[in-house]
Image (cartoon, rainbow, N blue to C red; front, side, top):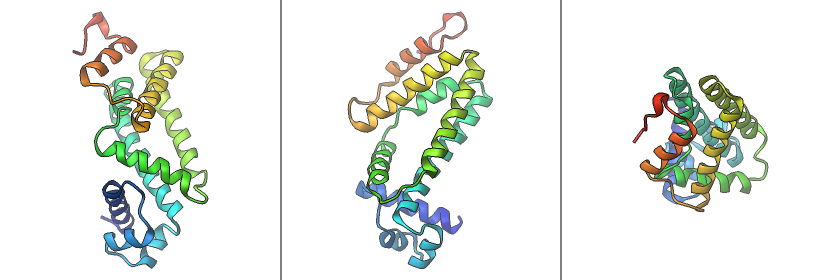
Length: 177
């Protein structure tokens, strides 16, 4: 594992333990690197927050690309949009930290906009319908936002299957349940 990845892993683990993105000193200590070594990759806490957010986007992107190659981009998007366990805590902490840092920059927003556009295009290629793709993407956004904000719990697997069946009809009307 390269030093940058080691630092991000340590920051992610500390974020999950504490519920907040850690300080640079705590991250350096947990990663077993000097503060100078950390600052080489992440010169500020804002840069660390960006690094964690970009890493999360890259993980989602890899999952969407794989699903798209299997013809399951729409279903995968909806399933990936329901954060569970550690993901809820991580996304909550990132949302708070992104707002709290002095200058979070536009890198994360630009990367997120590009990724969302690509994912919606994957869904559109699969469904053949731009409007349906947008609705599916927005439903996924709503699921994620509601769970992360604590507005409602994550849907059960059966509830999610019912939602997916309503949005992405299977050939012959077969159910996922």
